[in-house]
Each structure stands twice: as structure tokens, then as C-alpha cells.
Amino acid sequence: MAAIIHILGTGTIGEPLLGLFVDLGDRMGIDEVTFHKRTPLRSDRPRIRHLMERGAKLAVDAERRNDFEALGHEVSYEAREAIERATVVIDCTPAGNENKELYYQDISAPKGYLAQGSELGFGTPYARGVNDEALIPGETRFIQIVSCNTHNITTLIKTLCHDSDSYCLEQGNFVCMRRANDVTQTSGFIPAPSLGAHGDAEFGTHHARDAHRVFETLGQNFDLFSSAVKLNTQYMHTIWFRMAFNRDTSVEEVVERLRANPRVAVTEKQQTNLVFSFGRDHGYYGRILSQTVVSLPTLTVQRKRELYGFCFTPQDGNSLLSSVAAALWLIDPDPSSVSTRLKPLSKWLYQEV
Ligand SMILES: NC(=O)c1ccc[n+]([C@@H]2O[C@H](COP(=O)([O-])OP(=O)(O)OC[C@H]3O[C@@H](n4cnc5c(N)ncnc54)[C@H](OP(=O)(O)O)[C@@H]3O)[C@@H](O)[C@H]2O)c1
Image (cartoon, rainbow, N blue to C red):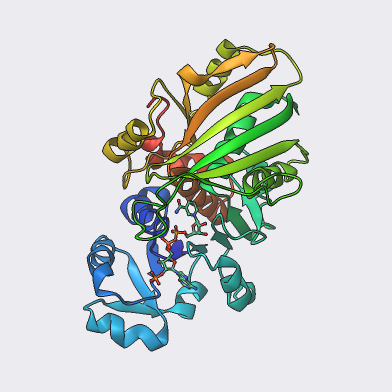
């Protein structure tokens, strides 16, 4: 049976994800890539055309078909038809939960559906390499790929605190310093740091809560707290962290563990623009796919059991990697087969930046 990936949304995350599947799909066992675009816009024409030249097929809502054709686009499918014929549907819109209610839960043909970070409750929260065992073959059909900062926090905890069959984490604190807007966005920029309220009574902000939810799928109940501040930058997010351990540790042990995880990068750099520009120069669509970039000069251990440091969240690259991994898992959940089919992406998993 042909493996068809259907992606809804061509925005910040949808477009590079489509790119990965059209450029590398044949090496990942994908036969066809289709995508849904909602709004026919002349200004979007060059990027839609470029995706289609590389093999992606366009699906649109029936009432918009004429508008897309008037822009010179060949329309291959109508919106619902494209979902019905897909093997895996990846929702990259801010309306994943709404679409689940309207369409996905009633269309049983696809093996599964993915949605992105904002869509709390869509399905099993997932980050590649953190909770793969939470995906149950033949059972899990709805998966929420957690946000880029949640990838970063959960990867730090898994990498530094997982001791064979237990975790040595006593408490984790995280300050997420977020860019005011993406380079692809045209609004929302702020000219000054803007502090986030601690709206979540237990976790501070949604970042710690979302990380907690990921570890809940593994039966863990960590004491996590996060704060958020938006900075007047368009570069990537940065996170300050404090992790208290229930045993002694050292900077040497921490660095050794970071270096041993192929999905983690370390860096001697301390400036966000330098890490961002490394991604622009050496990434795919300007992104490296590593889940976190930890700044080595900032690491310190206090009182033998408290680790402090800073790390960078390499844009949305970590969500892209997990989206591809989860889609390949839905097609064939055999773990070694998923790893083999993911290999074409490994050249953007840097261990040093
Ligand atoms: N940006 C990030 O760094 C990042 C990282 C991780 C996860 N995410 C998550 O990814 C999702 C998408 O974010 P984004 O930044 O890629 O958004 P975006 O750049 O604003 O793009 C949104 C896309 O979704 C389409 N869309 C919006 N509402 C729709 C609807 N009701 N039905 C169908 N299509 C719709 C838009 O289509 P038209 O333009 O054609 O109208 C557009 O292509 C969010 O859940 C976000 O939390 C984002």
C-alpha cells in the first residue's frame, strides 16, 4: 500500500516539514506528499510553486479551487478527499483540535494524525528520544508533537537525569526567554522585554506543565516550574535552567552525558545570533534538527547537587524531527525501521555548534 503524507498548513512549521518529505521522502519510504493550503495568496505563490515543482500535490477547499487555479496552481485534491486518502495526516495549523473535531475523528482511513505544540489534548504528547515508549503500536492514532521549548526541557531532563531505571531529578526550574516573533512573522514584535505572568498555579507557565505531561506518559511526576519572558529579538529562544539532583553530580558528568546524546548539541558560544546563524548556514531551511544546544561555558554545579546553565532552542527543528519520526512510526512502528528511515535527517543533527 502506498505511503502518503498529507500536511495541513504551510506556515513556519508546515513549509519546512513539507520540504523534508518532498526532498527526502523516497529515502524514507514515502510514495506521495500532499498538502492543504487554506488561503489563495499571490504573495505565497513562489513558495507554493517551489514545493509543487519538487513533487508536492496541492489540496484546497472546494470553494477556493477557482481562486487557486486563477493563481496558476494545479489543484489535485479537495480538502476532505486528501485526508481520506492519506496514510498519515500532519496538522501544522493552530487549529489542530478544531480540525480533529470537524474531520479527523470521523475519518478512519489514515493510520494516524499529528498536531503541533499549541494543540493541548490532541493526543499523546511526544518528543523523539524522550518518550518513544509511550506510543503504543495499533493503539495510538492521535499524537501531539510538543512545542520547541518543551522538547528542549524534556530532552535536558531525560539526558541528564535518567539513571537506567530511575531519575535523579529532585526539582527543575526553567526561565524561557522567548523571541518576540519568528523571522517569518510580520507582526507581534515588541521593543522591550515583556514579562509573562505565572498563570499556572502549579507549574508557573505552560512550559513546565507541558514537560510534566510528557513525563507523565512514562509514569513520572516531576517537580517542575517555569517562567517566561519575551525578548525583543527575532533569534531563537534561550532557556536558563536549574536542576536539583538527589545525588552528587559534576560538570564533567553533565558534559559527558550531553555529548553522548546524538540529538543534543553543545557549544562554546554564548550569543544567540551565533547559534542562529550556524543554523542558517548549516541547517535545512535554516534549521538544525538538534533538540537543544547547551552553552558549555555557562554550566556550573553548586553544592554538588545543583546544576545551573543556559541552552538555546534551535527554532522549531526539534518539532520537525519528532513530526517526521512520529509519522514514520505510524506507518511502521518497528523501532529499528523507524531509526533507519530517519537516517537521511541525521546530517542536520549536530553534536557541536
Ligand atoms: N513557529 C514555531 O516555532 C513552532 C514551533 C513548534 C510548533 N509550532 C506549532 O505549529 C503550529 C503552526 O504554527 P506556525 O508557526 O507554523 O503557524 P503559521 O506560520 O501562522 O502558519 C499557520 C498555517 O496554518 C494555516 N491555517 C491557519 N488556520 C487554519 C485553519 N483553521 N484551517 C486550515 N489551515 C489553517 C495557515 O494557512 P493560510 O496561510 O493559507 O491561511 C498557515 O499555512 C502551531 O500549533 C504552533 O504552536 C510552531
